[in-house]
Length: 347
Image (cartoon, rainbow, N blue to C red):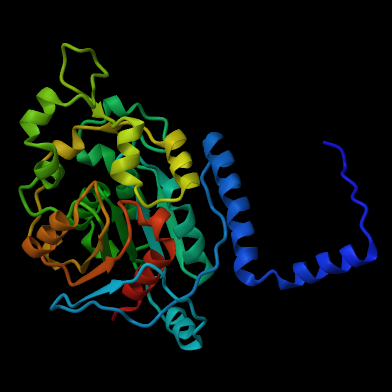
């Protein structure tokens, strides 16, 4: 493209200058977001991890006690730069967050969250589960929760002895962090279930969706979303919703550009891990500090189902994000960020 020259009178030039000065911070932020989205989409198409900068800050403590007191964040969350909050973060023992995506997603979906957490001095790590994101494993060959969670368990195994992390699991990723809590409780400071499958002992991750998808047996026999990677005559190996269905289930409040990013980045999910019953013991999983974040405009995992999960398996604290769909890292990144920071600060 060639350069473009524009001639203006002195008056026009002055008017333009005045208008430019009147551009406030909010307008500049919109321009910044536009550029960021374009960069993110381009990088996703090249199958790279995403990490861009957003303005982030902290807020006062919201909730989180053994009585599961609850607070709801509004659609619009005011930001502040509180020196006291910054000092609290500096004194935190656990600053490392390990972000675990849900079915079909990959580490790429956390790009806003990674940027916001880094902005306040925390250390987020987003992992691709086996057969997800840019992991090259054929998901048709992933048959167990242990296999699916291997990148997470490998990461925890390699942590220094005296180091702990905060785990965040989205959707079916909740089963992965439950599995990790059972096998590596000494490595985990807190576990945060983000509109996730927070199952009890003997439950399957799929059971959480039974009200919406029917029984596991019915789903395995009749669902049109199943993938038979080893041939039609053999059991299904994965599942993936059609694009229009995904948009309605997952992204009913998400920005258009993030939906476009998801449409070119999502992969099929292995079905074996979500049909596996978890063994969770009182002396390992039962001693964990668990927190739950509910999304109140969620069509994939309805607010009623999420409420049932926290009622049947009470966590230490419950947080709610008003106006969020199933993907608050897209639809309400600032609200999600505030809650993650608040949970990290809870003593």
